[in-house]
Image 1 (tube, protein in one colour):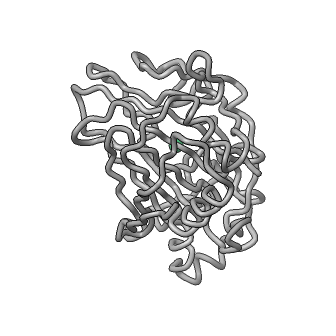
Image 2 (spheres, rainbow, N blue to C red):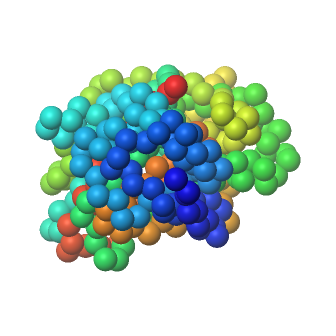
Image 3 (spheres, protein in one colour):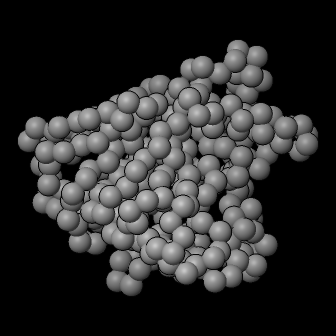
Length: 278
Ligand SMILES: [Fe+2]
């Protein structure tokens, strides 16, 4: 197997050809993909015809499945969720805000696999931002103020009954299950060393981050907001364009991502798995 890799030319991301992901991967092939993944953070594999079982098998090359709270799985596949939107849907776009998946967990997922099934011809790009780069270029005084600090993460603003996807969220085709469990909090260092690359990056952002440990709430939130404005700057971003039958896998440990709209009147549907902590 010879992987054919085309970097996006932006802050991260690469497109990969030369491998059929519907077939079991040899250990060496999975290791080669993993190395390219760690280098580029976001990989896109166009033109892959995958069943749900093949998506599951592919995911398991990189770790166990993650735990997916608050979104019901598709029937018969407890580790796959459907990210979908109907043509006539008017609820706000799902996940159209920066985050890294399930960062409020004690052991957040290493990565996420997202497979495009119904992809509109325009719109629906996914934005990523490279958090190694954001930290590398962070102003020294801002770095000093976050060094050694831990952020408090929580799903409450999204998935509590009072949250964005809670009781007030109507007419959504995704099967979201708000819960009081979303009130829980979990601290993670703001600057984290990636367990595989050893490189430091920023981890998470305002949204799932609701404060900073040991800081006055208002002061903590000001700092969280200041980091957010830095870490989401356009110079750190990669805009990913989808096509049908494309599998994308990203590293949640060193990136943020968000969905975008722009496809009103068209259906969109993707299947998602998470790669759990090693
Ligand atoms: Fe996400």
